[in-house]
Image: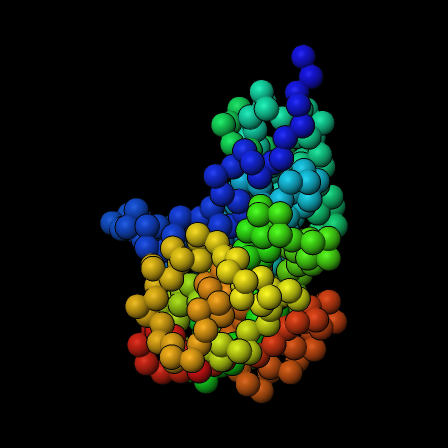
Length: 348
């Protein structure tokens, strides 16, 4: 009996990186987990909420390993696969590594989705991996109530060139490579309030590989990197601050936005995840009274396959900005700086 077509997003209670547990809930769950410091070759573990684990293989190679998966953020199955794969590979790039291969993670309601729909999701992910120059070498699948897709992504980097989210220095400037607003766009899509131009903007941003990360270790003065995903800009900036034991000043109006994001946010489009994010870390953010609620929402907006947040010596800011623009990150911008003090953020 043929399976009737269905909107992918209608099968999921959430979508994209907005599905992530809130920072507060995650911290509570992980509290008391055993430390991983006893393993001499584990260069990066879970201690600083970094983007991937890193294991030293030898004097010239370290293995970067990560996984990421989520429920549909869009209805087109091929686009869903592309977005999920791009998002998963981002963690490898954020560590300064080059991907080598991936494994697919697939959970699908096989009684609700036609085989050709599931195949299109996998094809979308494989197309992104091909663009990154790597194979999808295998994976695992289950019958699931909600559609889930993502990757285990592996990469290689020289041990001396691993980029971390915890090595920022006081005085570093903060650079963001992609515009904010992915969560707002996905919410508008579910509400049938996103036009064709907005959808094209959403797909272009979420399928843009963060390949810039591969060359950042070779730019003197780049100290720390992370990618901005489900916890929003402020959440991931706070992780950087906590890892380095520093504070940050972020210019709220300087954070780049995707075209149309401001209009949607002003019209009241928001995600539940942005509210949960603010509830989790708002106490560590000082905002002046004139910061509008819609802008604060965008600073907390979950970014599925978002940009890189880079802490860099001011003298190296222009080389980083130039490299980002050459790689097609047209909205890259300096948004703030790291300062000595408590690991908190002040919006200016």
